[in-house]
Figure 1 (cartoon, chains in turn yellow, blue):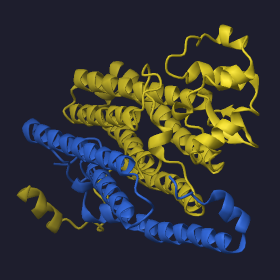
Figure 2 (tube, chains in turn brown, green):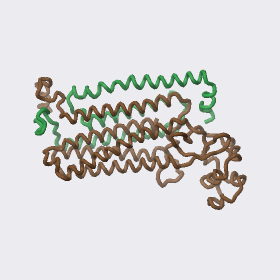
Figure 3 (cartoon, chains in turn orange, blue):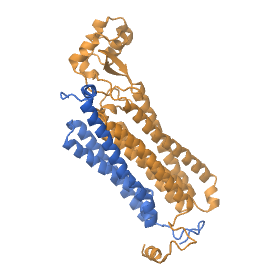
Figure 4 (cartoon, helix red, strand yellow):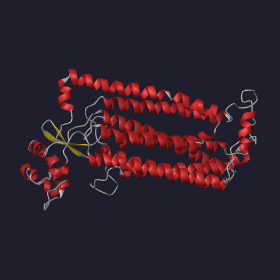
Length: 295
Length: 134
């Protein structure tokens, strides 16, 4: 380190013949690209913040993101997204290890750690696919025009408005459609209900069905602010697209390393640039996680 | 030591395996612990179910500061920006200072829009204002 410090003092960085920033062209340009990408993501997130601040009500992330694959209706706020966050942190660590192996011209090390990084990226994408699917297809009861409807979260509407009181929801049951009542009686049966099979429930009358629904479990809400879905899918989708392209870049790096391209070239600096991109994806997730899930 | 393929690069960062390993493990542990604290605070917000007051803002402020700390560690250690020379760091960090204005100006604009709407549009206020019987 001391030797380096004296080099810095003695070096005339702007004297010509050398890179004044002590990095090669490709790496510097990757940094500038990432800076511009940071502004793109920043603009999206700030736009989201502006709209959120212009609303009196905004959905509580602990209510929206409380599902976990295979856990049914269990209320597990933030559990699944924590898993996604740790997957991304760990894949960032394996990328650092791949870059380090590259510095040592260790071909097998580069291949091994890149493969783990790709696996982490794919795992993250699978998690996001599940999350989106769950949000879009998971139907939740909302009070709309005096009756209860079942909607999922889309870019046009979402079921994450304010909780409706039990009395108000009970009144709305009378005006709701047969299909809605069957769905609710199936998903949220009163304790001790003997019939929960949808086929059997189909044959019952609306009044019978209404008495078989446990409204304390159903959590009937109003519709939430329409902008929520657009921002959520837009920004997590744009981040997911970055993860996807990062995985593609890493796969290309893996194939090139495997074929000995970098070995012949004598250095593994391409891995370093791919690594910068991959860490940036992790960096953006820190802020997406902050803005959508934590606060 | 000059770079073999890039003569314009004056010296390279070389770190022996031992100190590299130590540094990576330390950073990973810090990132993990900070994330766990963030999650704890997020769940605390849910458990306490506070109204939109100062205490809520305080917890959210803590989470934001912790996230910035995480961002610092990722950029400085994982992306090795901390190891670059000062001029290089500044060309990346100084333009990002624009975010200070960007965030304050736009959030304030959104907030002002809400206040004006609540003042002049009673329908908006009535239909969207959270009820107190939470």
